[in-house]
Amino acid sequence: MRIEPFRMERMQSTYENYVEYNLSESGVAPMRVEELLAGAGADPAAFLATGLGYPQSNGSEELRDRIASFYDGATRANVLVTNGRAEADPGSFWRLLEPGDRVALMVATSLQTRGLSRALAGRVEVFRLAPRRPGRRCRSALAL
Image (cartoon, rainbow, N blue to C red):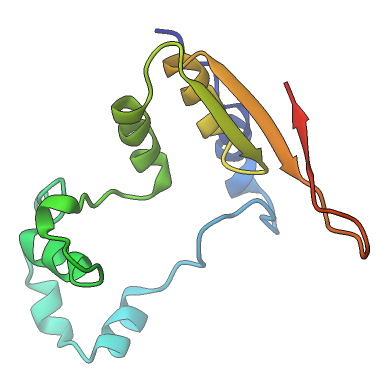
């Protein structure tokens, strides 16, 4: 299977650390460890004494239980924790898409979605939302 290059990510990873103002950042501003500990009321000594290791890759049982508690009828078996969308998308698409499937993709969204969908399903149809004007029906523009 050939997955097309994710050009936006290549551009960002090449230049994002060499600019004064990063207008393409999609995450939050990083915090210092002292800020995290102050907000949690945690003992810095206990934090500094914590051993580092690989966590449970799908999220700990306690974390998945807490996330599931937000949804009626859900259990930890219904929850998979990832390190963000860039990790969640491929797993979701591998599970959901099959060759010959047709994907409707709203732009603007992560362009990773387009490349993965093309590789796994084959056919991607892009649409954009058009702003509603007073007195006119709402419609989208479909680019086949």
